[in-house]
Amino acid sequence: MNIDQYMQTLGERARAASRAMSSASTGDKNAALLAIARQLEASRPALIEANATDLAAAQANGLEAALLDRLELTHARIDAMLKGIEQVAALADPIGGLSDMRSQPSGIQVGKMRVPLGVIGIIYESRPNVTVEAASLCLKSGNAVILRGGSEALHSNQAIAACIQTGLKEVGLPQTAVQVVETTDREAVGQLITMPEYVDVIVPRGGKGLIERISRDARVPVIKHLDGNCHVYIDDGADEAMAINIAVNAKTQRYGTCNTAESLLVAESVADALLPKLASAYQAHGVELRACEKSLSIISANAANDLKLVAATEDDWFEEYLAPILAVKVVAGLEEAIEHINHYSSQHSETIVTEHHPRAMQFIREVDSSSVMINASTRFADGFEYGLGAEIGISTDKIHARGPVGLEGLTSEKYVVLGNGHIRT
Image 1 (cartoon, one colour):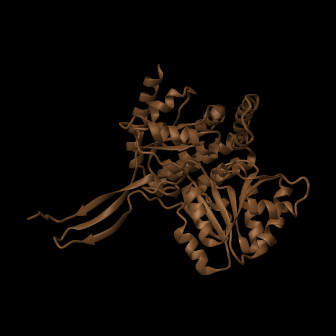
Image 2 (cartoon, one colour):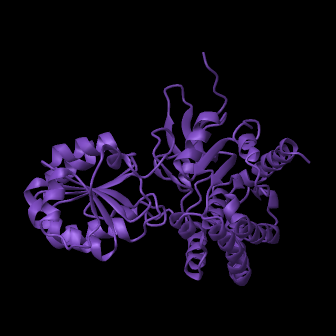
Image 3 (cartoon, one colour):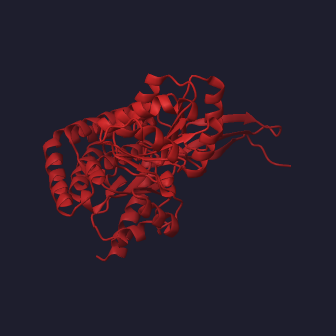
């Protein structure tokens, strides 16, 4: 079977499965999720073994450190996957809910019903845990899904998919509600994103090049974010200990994630006091600082000899490093910080550290990003942390879904009209 025929077959099966999933009961969907969790737990050794095969091949092929980190499937990450499934099962089922019912002058009642999107195509790189997160959210929201993981995670994804399909079969739901593309041929992606007769929306999760290509070539709607150039801004009079803790956590808790801070902005009035302490904290984590002229002067005057410190270029303000590198800039105050963020940010996640309520409110009103925070690390920009159970991705689009995309982001609404023999005159 050639790629065209193969993808056509996947699409036909997914469309048929989506019709069954749209009418599946909440009980059946939850039972399937818990059955999948049991299968994953029982198959833990096989999952680790399959992942080890992928890791060995990725290391031999020179995959960069950030992507190796995303690829690794540890026991702790399997635990997190299982917890995520259980949380999704515990969430309220959005499908079929009626809202905004209002009586009209004609006597009819008009409202909205939440419905599945249908068939979702998800294209992602490295992270095998995405296979579980995506499947669980799509199943609970009554959708079918076609998953195309990166070639570097092929064995891991196949092992996970086997558990998912066994769980679906156990409760009598169609196994084809979750299908993993089993070819590494890149033409499969080209087919998946140009099948509007079978696929209702595409969700790309990966590098900027992948997402730009899909956004350019897709013939189906796309829920996307291009990158995660996230900012921490330390305002005038911020609590010093809080500012240091948040700024360091936002950068160093994990380097290879889209909600990791890539730029630090510090108000001029507190820069002399804070930047040397921040530089020392980053030095302890081996973070290289790419600093503006003013911050370079302040830090270098107080820095240890082994601090990684270089002058920032214009490109650094746009960069998503996914590495222990941080751009640092001294700004005059809140207005310049907001202007800088709105110019250079990828509209993902930004935070202000401040004790001043009016400035905090101005920041969250005027910063145009999908998540805007006050006195919290950008690392919280995550579906699990937001109580969504898991996320399909983080959207920086402004239409349909924005921010972490959970159950509701995988649904739509249709109008419902209730009458009792009403006719229009």
